[in-house]
Image 1 (cartoon, rainbow, N blue to C red):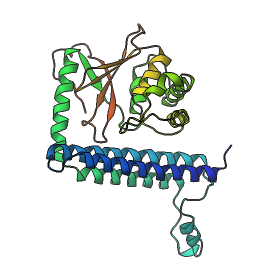
Image 2: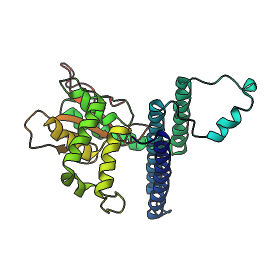
Image 3: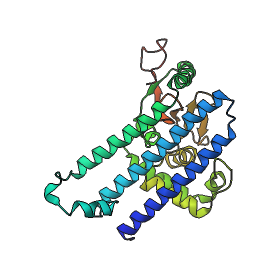
Image 4: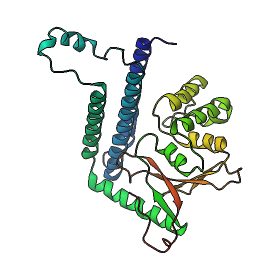
Length: 291
């Protein structure tokens, strides 16, 4: 097993690399949108805020998980810790681990809200309204209603979990997804590429991606949904506002699990909700409540 300190340093180096890669990606996105196109520039600000918030949440959750697993490893800023030991009598009482965790989460929430506030909220509201109206119309024709999932990086797995007739944890769904993808690398690798350049990723990078599914709070997407449809041997249908529904695992005959993908309705960006048939007596009523 790798030494905790070495693992900590490896994780921090990866966080640094991922931030640099995101900065480069954002710069390419900015360069590709003319400054004269105000509508696309506003959309760009939304996309940048979402990407930055997702990465910050992912890194914060990974740090918290590491510190829970190795509570005896020294704080990341060892210099500050050494200085604090010089005169302990004049220092305030040390916060408990739970208090530090709450403060980190509060700081993360404040940073995320600050970024969201920088976006043109009026323009975002128009996107939300349009998305809600389109989804409302689609769901009404199918006699479906929305069920909100907690807006975090586990939302896709929670939406699947919500509709299964047997009990299963989110951790188990993540583990089984990664296991299936590792065993069927050749089925997934052709679809595993850089979203900006289209360049194919290596097999080793794919296996590292599978590890992140289990050991980090990574977001789930189409690759994971495809794997889950095979793991559960059940079709998974994803309803979205601006495109036809996507169905994974069409070869299976069970009743499909149905998810709704939203891009603007949730404050934290892309999100999955669970969808179930309308309750008795609800047909013909108001459009489904989204959030």
